[in-house]
Length: 78
Image (cartoon, rainbow, N blue to C red):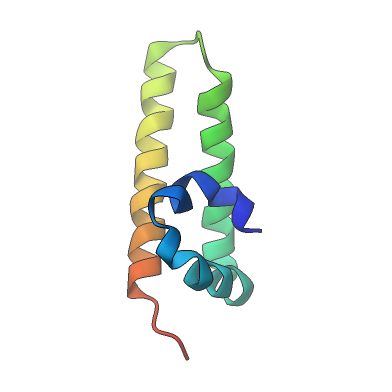
């Protein structure tokens, strides 16, 4: 499950347990993780593509990353 946002967690590895809890308990967070993974894969696959399209994908990835980090940092264990 955590593999979906492994690249993000690489920079914030201290939050892996929080991410695991959120993915298990919060379907909305899990959906954000899946979208993050999907957009990251699209970017990776677009080695030589439309630059405007890549720019939009990168902007979407940054938006999702910010949203995920905000949720991770705001999580309070029950």
